[in-house]
Amino acid sequence: MKRLLLLAGLLVLMWGLTACNNQATPLSNPPPPAGNPAVISATKPADAGQVGASMPVPAKPGFAQGTPPPGRPQSSGPTPTPNFAIMRSVLTPAGAEDVKLAIPFDVAVDRDANMYVADSGRILKFGSSGNLIKKFDIPKDSPLLFAGSLVVAPDQTIWIADTSANQVRHFSADGAMLPGLTNVGSEPGQLQAPTDVALDTQGNLYVAEKGNRRIQVFSPDGKNIRTFGKAGQEPGQITDPRSLTVDKDGNIYVVDVANARVMKYDKQGNYVLEFEPPRSGDRFTLLRSVVYDPVRNLIFVLDGQSGRVHAYTTEGKYRRTYGESGDGEFQFRNSQGLGMGQDGVIYVADTGNIRIQLINPSYP
Image (cartoon, rainbow, N blue to C red; front, side, top):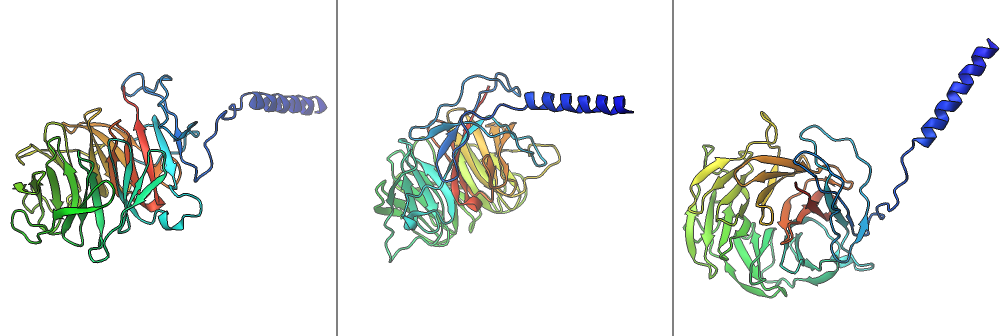
């Protein structure tokens, strides 16, 4: 019996030593504490569906490199791809309480990587390193009632869908108010509850209207060019247009929240196709935003409830999924808006977590 006990003790000791030797090496460059903006490096897949170990994603200027945290359990649905860099940011200088984010609803980026955030009835402009540049001075006699979305034009002016005011507002890059689209009604050129704005390569402005259940296209000088869309649930019909984007060929992609779908139209407004959810038989839970990536010619779709950003080809073919629901890194909660940098970096208005996060996708 004593020999058996001694043998058992030796086996336990050997197991313990082996476990200690096999422990993972501590992260040499751990992520910084919350509140410090950081870009976390990522690797680029060697082949489609295969994770490689090369080409770390470069950090954006002004942000420190970090190391991705260990893998975390994934919720149900498509497996999120871990190969992306992310910036978590409080975007608030010490002691500047008046510029803390409150309800970041949408984000847009200009050619210099400056970031514009629609945040609880105000517009905040940040530099590429997360520093506050300006808080737009909104006239008291013409306040932003609800800045649902915004987009930066080629001339660096900002268009904002003010849903509650039934207007599309227009500002210079410095925050000065410019003439916008202010006619209220249901005729062509008039607006009812605009929810999103987008631009094509010619500078034409596209407006999604919840009130009129349609899409309108305006020239750079504000003249109505085209109107399309009809209320309903049939292919091509629109019930609740929440977001839209335009690709390099002029095709339009529309998120219809009520019908839980993303539809593609050609440049004339003719229905082309509908995106299928990532998994056959699934249904999008709460679509919030769609944005075009001109660098990779892809469409990114934000499902706010699941905390996921899905990548599709312009022909509606599913590619992969990023993120999951939560409040940690690589996670999003009740996110409402997507923006796209000219370098292909995706900006996420992570509304429920009161922050802006950046996804730098890696592709084969």
